[in-house]
Length: 575
Image (cartoon, rainbow, N blue to C red; front, side):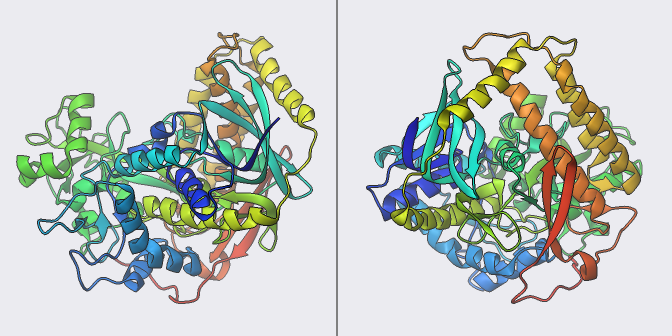
């Protein structure tokens, strides 16, 4: 059995920033970090547009209070306002801290960090490194990890959280190279495992975004919060689904329908293309439904709209958003200087996740916490995004709450002893799970079942939802879960068996998908990214509450938790 003072699962921004903060607070602490990819291949590296903070380098009238209000309004008033205040107050300091670590932000002519406009923000406050911001930040954090002697287990896959008597005691993980299993005990366990976009068939998320941490929590009886709120980014490159950053619209690109109209004037006349993502995604979907989408041959009635950069000019495109130009050119052969990009909404971000307080400690209910267990980043729900996240607030959450959670863990473990448990029992259980999958004889290929599950989620829990559609989706999910025992793996070796990983990931995706559908079915209102055509209005009287969903073999049980409202009273959301 391996031992660390702290074990962190996830090598993205939140996990790396927490690890660094723990070592800053107490260099003597032994910190381990586990990632199923190399840390610099974590999905944080794909974040493009920027990170919000009220530095006032471009807009001296900006303030943390304005940033907080924009965030709460963007969340459709479901964000916890104490958490939002911490996020926005601490934002400028974490940006300067990142700069001192070596992050190469884009600059203004006078040398200050550049800031651009972003959807839903009332001021130009988004700091950026061209359109490769996550890449720039994550590389520096990983470099700093090495200098702090954090033990990194890259390309190890975590299978189980060890939770006994309301205390997180460790994890079970295996080495992808040779399938060697290890139990790890620690005084504190932190999950920073990212999102679950691969629940859907079209997503901007990488192949590793399979909700592993959330499913592991659900399997040991812990709740998941606000899982019905899944953000669909309005500008996924059609048909591949990869992200065309909001930075492109922040720099001035237009959305046009088959008639050439900038249709956002009909949906958000003040913010236009920089309306919040939920509003823009619905607008694009409605344009396509109305027959004003575009076919690849340019005719009307097709499945996408155009994102038009041509008026921006080559110099601005290649200096401000070069990666987006590269993606369209590499994947579709489109030169965005001369041609518009085909785009439509793509599953992008998880507003929900593992419920935590503002110190990152995991909740087991509205009123009780789990000892020794912490979470941060997209895997967690603190909740600073509520029903809809504003662009450039996700990197900020990872860094602010990664730092806060790291500080809380460093203090927490000072008086903790290493826990005790029967490691062999947990390793045997994991070994049995793996062996059953490897030896299972069936008539079904893994990829076929996964595709049908992802198609089901996209069809039955997409941008627009109704009870009838979601109930049919839940029936399909149950039928697909029953087919899991028919899978036969073609690779039965123990060396670098990616098919085995994908089989375990599909189990996790099915847990997450069932929780999303059930939570969405029972929220009979429209709020933020959760848009019910059968309940088109927001219902604060009943649903100004967070959903807590408990998954079990018998189904999903729901409870609710009040939203923290201490500054901004909910009102109608207009842009």
